[in-house]
Length: 108
Picture 1: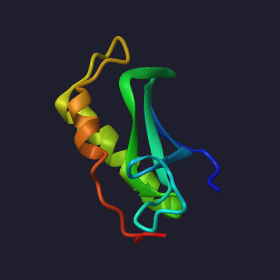
Picture 2: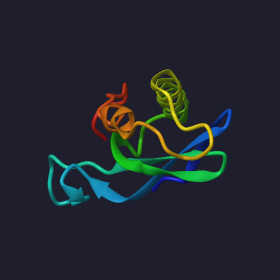
Picture 3: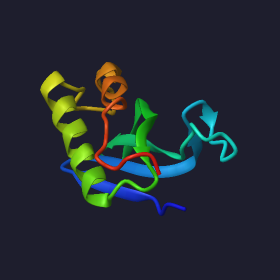
Picture 4: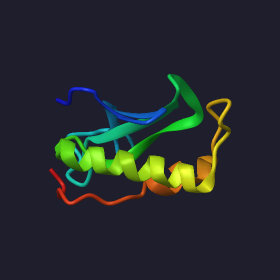
């Protein structure tokens, strides 16, 4: 359905993957209002960031170019707010807000 996609931005990486999530937890294809959604996980220098993995509003059909742009936006926001340069800690609120980002591609 979706091949994992990793975007490297300096010391950060955002990995997009589909693990079966939808709007209300597990994706339910029987529910017309549900959609298969991607999870994004943030890492810093190869280490997973604490509380850095969230389901997003990106559909599995979102173009890779848009996922790349979204990943770059997240890293930019993390850098502006600040992060612990000696480890994978960061302001998790940045990622929580970012997960509500909308995408050009409509409901699949």
